[in-house]
Amino acid sequence: MGTLERLSVNPAPRRYSEDDVRRAARNMLVGGCGMKAGDEVLILNENGITEAAVSDVIEDEARKLGGRVHVMWTDTVK
Image 1 (cartoon, rainbow, N blue to C red):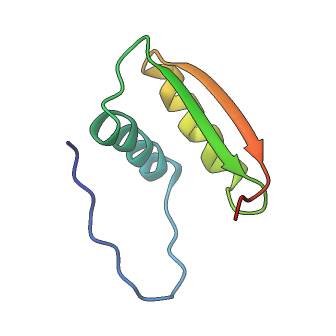
Image 2 (image 1 turned 135 degrees about the vertical axis):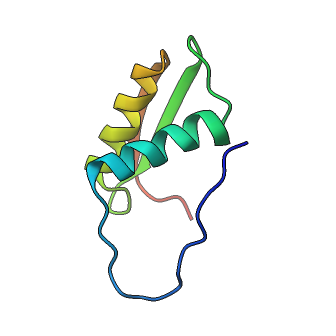
C-alpha cells in the first residue's frame, strides 16, 4: 500500500502543482486501489463537490496506467 502525507488541519488554503496532483492520483490508483493495466475504473463525481480538473487528472492517470476508465457525474446522495 502507498503512504499519504499527514495533512495539516490548518484551514489556510493549500496550493498544489499539477505534478503534485498527478503524483497523488497515481498513488491513490496504484498504492491505494491496487490498480493494474486492464482494470476497469469507475470515477464517480458529485456535482458541486468534485472539481472537474481533478477528476480529469485522475481519469488521465488511470488511462496512462492502462485502465479502462468510466466517468460518471451525479448529484449528492444523502
